[in-house]
Image 1: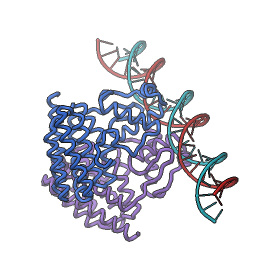
Image 2: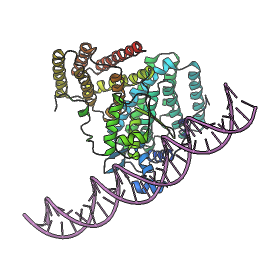
Image 3: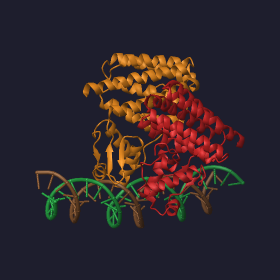
Image 4: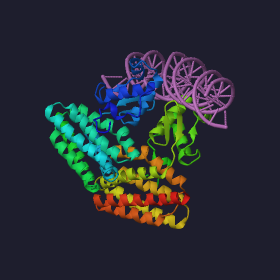
Length: 232
Length: 232
DNA sequence: CTTTCTCAAATTGTCGACAATCTTGGCACC
DNA sequence: GGTGCCAAGATTGTCGACAATTTGAGAAAG
């Protein structure tokens, strides 16, 4: 499994979904991220409990976890709403993301093994070829991008950083990308940026890798922000 | 309340504790952070539920929140343990903290009002005088330090960053500081560092402020790390 | 004596019902 | 006609009991 691409599902392989709360949590999270339930809409506990065929206490538990992921907001004795995707919040989230993934890059430059680095380079080449063949097919770009960032973060060897990025930030970022229709643009440019980053890591130049990653994420944010403004 | 010191309790004034889950959560969090329940120890749901005079479902809800704060770890069908404070985890947490508070400083330099900055400077002078009078009385240093960092983070005007630091990181950091006996050393040095940071912010020099804050936090980590090694 | 299997006790996960709180529509009063 | 209060409905918070899973002690086999 070392040099093979991972899909969104296989990105969390260690947490095998066993309990009912887990299943509802994963299912609801997907529904929110992909827009099956509208952003800003109120969540009715009895209704959703019935839809997922589960007790209300179980559903409430799942909602608590979604709140920890910043995907829903909750007020005592009032209820639960899906978060609203505002441009202001987009900027806030991406500022945090840039700082954390910049750190991840710097740590990766000093902690990744040569083998791990080689695997990422092979992965990039593989994705580049696939992308040339399936021009316009955006899924691979989306999955490939996630995969690249995933490996850098893992390569930092900082468990706490990993959890923070994946549990508290990444689903929210995916939500912005999916619902803004971030499918397949900026592909070749992003590939070049990825390449420059992994090269810096290969040269063990943590400072440069951090800077390149921050810039890469900044570009990505501008891209989404433009879509926002275009759609008003 | 603008130029007045805040205690640990008043740091979260907006979330007035109303529901039973909130009360148990706050109480249990305090007990864990201050070491009333030993790190690494297993948590028995029925026992704690009885002790706090609350249902098991309610207590489980509180445990979920503690898990989101990284204060307990949970495995399905197995149970819940208080986190173990290892030196490795200390380093991980402080690397993340430095990146996030560095960002907070940079943002604060561009977003804080002149009045907010003046209030922090007044606060530092006030704490310095108090510290001179009550030499050795460590609580004020602890509270003053928390207060300073709190205001910088608030001053970043980034809500997401604030939540991340305060909900997912700060209680864990307090846990390290309290249980390692971080009481009152490094006081005058920390004051000088705080002063340098707020001066950089006053000059709207975000880059310098970020660097100083990262260094300040790095020193703070080394201090705790030394205690660790001394205690083995 | 060590290892493995079994089974019972304890612990966790899930559920349906009850109590407390908030919302909303309508009525009285100004 | 507008404003404020009240009651009924709906929604959330909390509880105790039942089901599923894990664990650990003890017996039996090697």
